[in-house]
Every structure is written in structure tokens, then in C-alpha cells.
Length: 243
Image 1: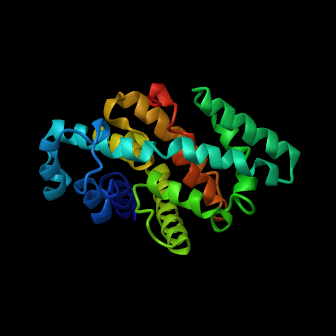
Image 2: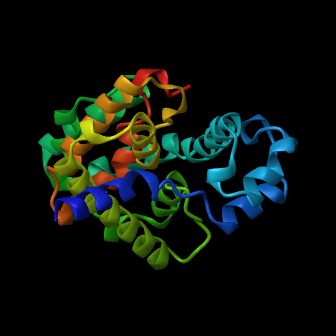
């Protein structure tokens, strides 16, 4: 039983740093060029070799490229959160969400209680997954490195499925204990959950992962829209990663 828990939790950090799928890589091939996408000489190894065969430098470069893509959606997602504030009926929750968005926009890393204070408004209208506007859903899909060029109902289904899996893995990982993970496993777990861990030290990654697990394990299944948004909320300003 203990062994199965270990295997399940290890899959959370090794098996789930998924290289973006065919649509995303094809989109790069079709000409989304620029500094964020890396030099042309990296194109073929990134598309034709699985992550196991990347050199250490290629791993860093490619993960930076993928993170640059998902990070582009962060300001957009924060702006969508600001737009729904008037739709929240509770004045206290309105204040908390306004304060959280302001902190993130000013470069502050939010505290765990800043995020958990909002769990109620992410469980139903206007920020439950089923209530999100189509453009909001598309931006969240990009933040998760999922294609955004699908009908909104299908995008919602994919986001809910991905978030539910991460939530289950978080529970298993919390039981296993972060201390049981290797440095590479910790970095992989952080990257999956939205943090570009390639340039952050192991201790800092363990601290961030602990914050993520504390939030995740406090949430009910009906509140997983908050966990989905946590990919942006908790990662944007951690140790200067906003740049």
C-alpha cells in the first residue's frame, strides 16, 4: 500500500511534466518567432526528441520557451479576475479579490491566506469553471499549455480534468512528503504547477511546493477553479519570476 502511494506520488512529479502537444509545437513551427521562442537550432530536438533525450542545456532552454508561452497569459487572466469583481455579491470577497489582484500587479507574492480567503467565489458564479467566460477559459488553457482553439465546453472539460488530476496527485504527494523527493522531482513538480523552476534553487522550490500543497489540500472538489487559477496567482511573482 505504501509502495503504491509512493509510485502514484512519484508519477506526479516525473510523469506529469508533459511536453506541450502537437498543436502547440506545430504552431511554433508555423512561425511564432521571437526571442521567447529560442534560436532556430533548437527547433528539431524539441519536436523530435522526447524530454529524456534532451541535454541539460536543452532542458533548461526548452522549459524556458514553454514557460514564456504560458506566462504571456498571466496579465490577461488577472484582468479577467478584475472584470468579474462587480459580479461578486459579497463585499468582503470583492475587497479580497481586488487586494489580491493589486498585490500581484505590483509584484508582490501573495500569502497562502490571501488566496484561500477567496475559495468561496471560485466555487460558483462568477468564477466557477462552468461560469467562466470563453476568453477567460482560453487564457487559462494557454497558461496550462493546452490548446485554446477548441469550443469553450471542451476547453472547460479539459481544464477540469487536468486540475482534478493535479489535485489528486497533490494529496498523494502531501502524504508521501516533499522531503522524500529528489531535487529534480521537486523542480519537475513545481514546473507542472506553473512555476519556472529551472532557475530557482532547490530549497526555494521546496518552499514554493509546500505553499502549493497547503492550498491544494485545503480545497474541496467544488473549489478547484481556485487551484486552476493558482497556477498564475502563486507563480507570477515568486522570487522575481515575473520578469
